[in-house]
Image 1 (cartoon, rainbow, N blue to C red):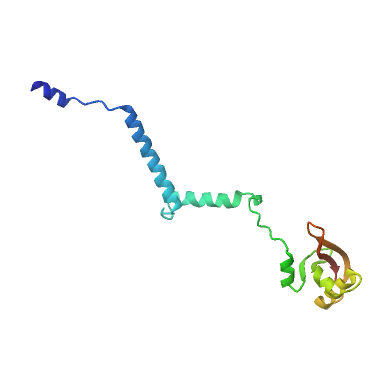
Image 2 (image 1 turned 90 degrees about the vertical axis):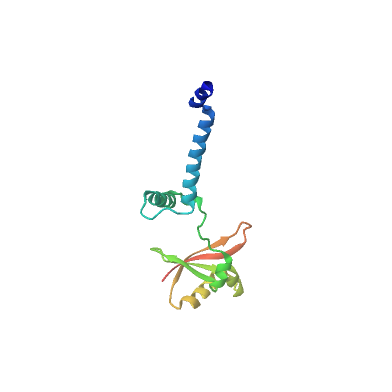
Length: 153
């Protein structure tokens, strides 16, 4: 019986691979727990984790290039229809710029589009103006969609 007590008191060595795997699983579990709490936004407000998440979001918003988001509005032909065929694009030192729908110009059935554009703008603005330039806006197949008109009041 003396021999059996000696074995009982001795510690058996554990394999080191088992310990390394357990430590790796523990670290991986902690990382998964942090990611899950970050995604579910379960940190308390005012804690350093909350502040870190807010900083990451702000950095993404402020530092991401605009080219990643193709959200520049473009003037479409359908938008012109809803504006009765004339849209004011803005004004500057040169004068006021308008976009006039080509179908509206064609509906007046004049020989020259310049005359029709002047008539359309005269009815819309109801004040004297002078046309500086008229530039046709074309699509990819070279069809005229409308006219960009620069005027001086």
